[in-house]
Image (cartoon, rainbow, N blue to C red):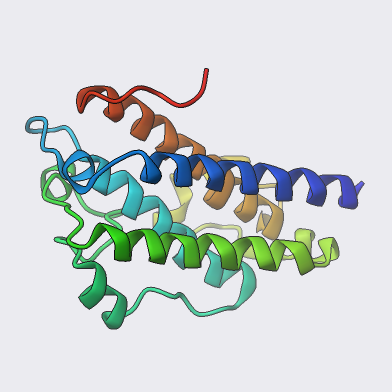
Length: 188
């Protein structure tokens, strides 16, 4: 059963990453940095937020240090050097990408690392608990806390919630926001 779960997860992550590549390949910096109005986050937020969260979450799952650092920030030039998880919409409406090609390189680096790790991982680690109950306040109100079993959030929960489901959520936001900048959605 674990091989079936791993195969499914590998395919779903590869496909989801492919949607992000399709989105970034069909948008310009003007599209991603477009400011619609107060209270509406730009596409730049969803792109960077998800990619940077996959990068950061992967550390807890795999033990590998995040890729994002001061050098990447200097290259990409994010207006807000933060994924924004614990910030308000009012703060994050200012998110912009400075160098779109550098951002796309960062995104590919993060996604390639995740897929390479998934290609080699032993599914026996899926049951390892990453965050035990009782959860700290910042975790207790999250989707992954609701999904977690009796022991806490496992590696499989982290992969499913923090990477896959979180990525699809933000892809939905990107698809909707593409309509605001004159582009269509990508899936039906």
